[in-house]
Length: 307
Image (cartoon, rainbow, N blue to C red; front, side, top):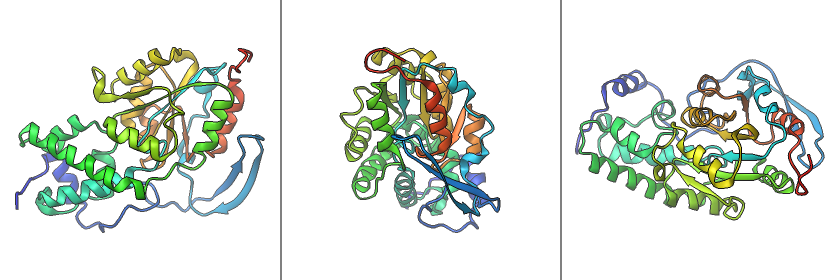
């Protein structure tokens, strides 16, 4: 078997984590331990705006780590547009990507055949662009061979996705809220176009997004601002009245660099990493009461042009 050793910084991380158990992706966040603090769950309706107190949970919600109340978002009023990442934002796809990477990397003997952990995936792979990942994971491999590995991994993802891909909670309610207020929108992703189109199709959102921007089709992919700047141009929106939904530090840096506040979803990645990247607000999912509170204050422009 071909033995591919991970680059020095990555190899160090892997060696430290070899004693960790290797298992299928858990339903919780990647790389984050449990908490003993108390949180109160809420539910709300986009149609009524009603917030209801729910049951008490012993595990702290990831978004409780947020230190910003969303003040940067409130300055956007009247809201004109919302831009969405796809992987990990519209859908919880990271477990599928993790499974594909873990299996294929083990097959080629990456890190002497020791399977990667979820923590390693979150810190070194999640949100990255394939060209950058090919260089960082395989610095000593011919680049074209490394890119071929990434292409094979994406094909494996597309094979697994139809039976596993699910929308993030509250997504379709939010989409109806956006449509009802005639807000501009676009999907902006580092995923290959074939992946992005498949995910939007599986989620039933192909027609919802009039614009799909692919990072590799821009001069520079995320974490550079180019994909988000291109989306703003294509939908004719101002960054002064637009915000972004993202789930990765790389994507958040791209949105911030494009001049927009970013709402970070803690679907899989550590909340602290998202905050450190510049997220203005952290939410658990699209049913999070903090999101509804901010949207109510943004006063979107309606179909007749009135606020």
